[in-house]
Length: 286
Image 1 (cartoon, rainbow, N blue to C red):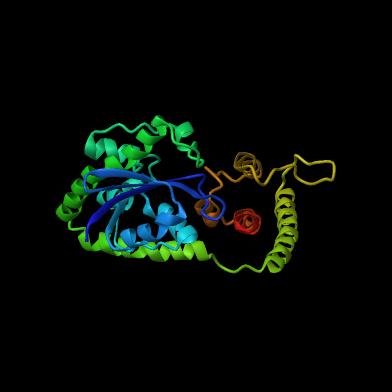
Image 2: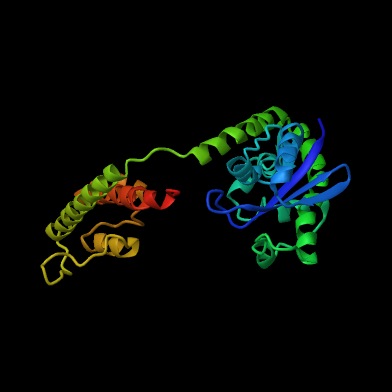
């Protein structure tokens, strides 16, 4: 089994709506740029499914390969996941800490030219010299990164953990492409019910404020407080004698005043509406 250093250029980020316009591979000291024509797909399938494929954030590329060409590599080395493991997970939450640009500099001392205009210019037309150099460098840096990360994984006794992570990538690709069924009518019905519940919970909280002595009332005689503004909520709660540092969940949980429980209940339903019910339909691919 040989090693193929691999990358793709696409028209966008969504494998259902976008397509691969260029495939880069570095093998046997040669960098080869391939346009994904029908005549080369079967060859690529055999090549990628019978060798170790090394790339950065391979899940992205593999979703495109599987959806468009039914190519499913399983022997993988993802330099992105390797970097997360080597850092003990610390880089997972740091923006830009594990990008190919950062990793290439850290391991190979090479500064990649990550120009967004070039990155978004691969639309299937004839390649410019600038595009060719950009695409080639993305795989040219991988051998050094791969070799040094292998040493680090071994040094840190993370080889088995890394192998488990790699074995999960094909399953994750399948899961993300397959999606999950959703009852849209049921979701819309629940959304309506939650909105009605939120109105009731908002009124309950404002009533508690008023009964607790809050004096800044609107024309309808209810407290003029925006429940979606933590700063204004904190000010309102202080106005009824509650000396709080914030309105976060732990503070509200410790609060014995009924306003704490009422606000927590409101926020729970608000999160269900804003985070899930309103956003779910936007994630449906046609």
